[in-house]
Image 1 (cartoon, rainbow, N blue to C red):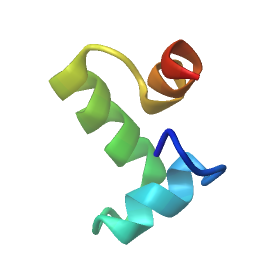
Image 2: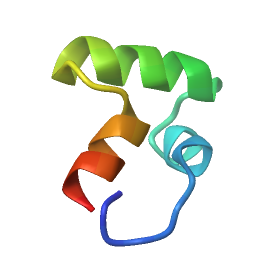
Image 3: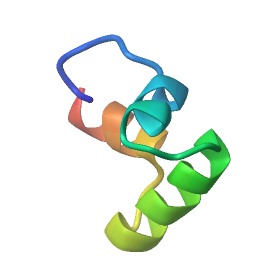
Image 4: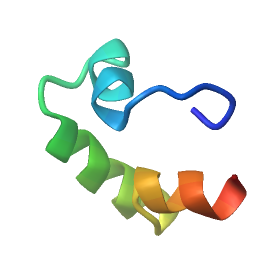
Length: 43
């Protein structure tokens, strides 16, 4: 996720989520940050 310019929605679909927003909620619940926040933090 950090090494490519892939959109969060594309990643969500690749890992089996039907909804990018559901992926973002689950990601934030597990890691404490949204996927976009993590991309910005580690870029």
